[in-house]
Image (cartoon, rainbow, N blue to C red; front, side, top):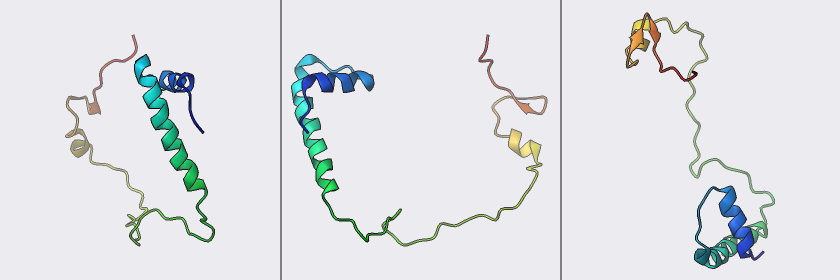
Length: 95
């Protein structure tokens, strides 16, 4: 599916990219080639191929689902740049 310059201009606008007019023709050609490659992928027969999340067979480690109260306020607040009265102090964001 070849793209024309007006379509590339619209894509650039939606992506909030400033593309000079002299670049539109080259970019349209490149994007058309990319879309062509993606369309070729649709022709590949993947019937019976299991989806995979990794090229290496592995099981991800899981931590035990144990309830705790987190209860060590001093250790948690040690990460705060400016703790105040036992809480994280953050800049005001609403006027």
